[in-house]
Length: 201
Ligand SMILES: Nc1ccn([C@@H]2O[C@H](COP(=O)(O)O)[C@@H](O)[C@H]2O)c(=O)n1
Image (cartoon, rainbow, N blue to C red):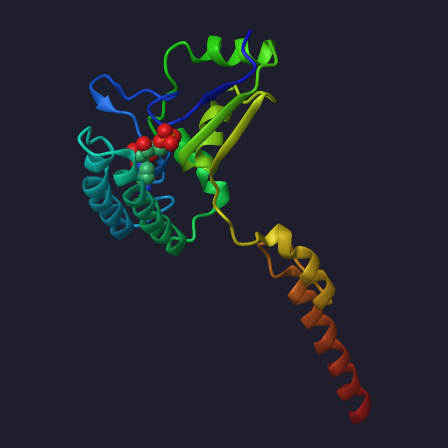
């Protein structure tokens, strides 16, 4: 019986190609206008064209490739940080992408989960995207453990709400109207009008 299964993700658990077209890696799934601009796409493609041939070059040793691969994803991650990617847009990007797990993935993931065999996924890809791909295929079971690159998102409004509530008298959430400011204005202007009226009479 297995004690654990260790796998990488892109092009191992996902397909290499489908109907003659390359299936995107987790980095390539981010190439979506919801997340990054055209300039970032262009620069990421240039980096892919430079470094991917090195990754698959059988004549180079792993020792030779390693610093170059680190250089690749460091450059890409610097570009991605500039894009201020929103966490809530990742699911849309994965849905719109042609990301695909390999045929037979259900049997593979279900069998390991059923027998409580830990599945360790080590990936040089993007962990947040990788998780979303597995989740959208409904096979994110508790036996899965992922070691990958995770994005560090800026705080959301929800996360900042507490500090706003502590700092301001009124905090409006998901209110697209000016009803509250108008009510405050009405209150202020009517009490001023009343004072003026009282001074005149
Ligand atoms: N900026 C990058 C960096 C890496 N990739 C590709 O992702 C693959 C990650 O593979 P794992 O097996 O570790 O999941 C890697 O093989 C690179 O080809 C990329 O597309 N963009």
